[in-house]
Amino acid sequence: MTARRAAAPASAADEAAQSAARDAILQAARAEFAAKGLAGARVNEIAARAGVNKQLIYYYYGNKEDLYRKALEVVYAEIRTLERGLNLGGMAPEAAMEALIGFSFDYLARHPDFIGLLNHENAHGARHVRESGAIRDTNSPLIDLIARTLRRGIAARVFRRGIDPVELYVSVAGMSYFFFSNRATLSSIFGRDLADEAAIASYRRHVVGFAMAGLRP
Image 1: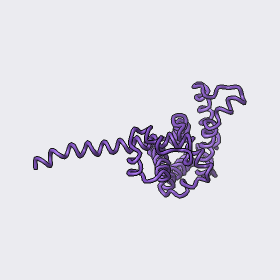
Image 2: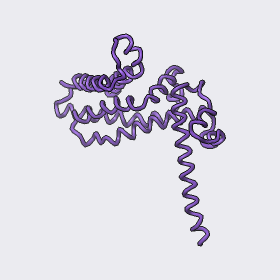
Image 3: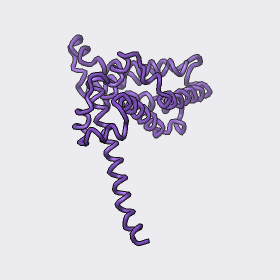
Image 4: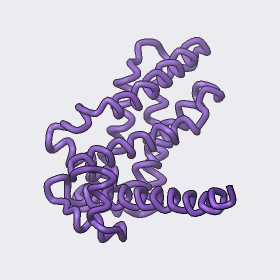
């Protein structure tokens, strides 16, 4: 009995260490895949970034492609978890939509690795996203939430009828995504430093205001 109790803390510590190693691998994989894509990324580099042995990556995640798919799934799950934390259902329709639009913008601002992952995945036909049931399952509740918020706004006469929730999501995400994915070229073309904090804050206000104006009757 005593021996079993003495072994328990070591087991818990071992589980914590394994969890930390898996998290470190995923974070390193996100950075490596975002920068180089699936073809260009190297397991050696991911291991070095994570500070683990390369064999540990294969043990936890299988091959490089499996790790890439898992990294995509984790990113999408992270976004949806954060969105649920906004508690949009408890807000008035306009406040809920403003919060969701602002969150979508802020997430891209804070996670340039997500933009890199999307760029590479789209360049290869989005095969891994298309084949991942986990990613599809995470996006369905978001569209349902947008649809319910639109219905509440219509009932309150603050939103107009005829707005498709998927088209709304694509429009909002597109405004934010294009800004961050093309910021370097846009800055050069228009002679503005769009990486400046004031420029980012100004465009955020524009995105929220522009989207909300399109929703009103």
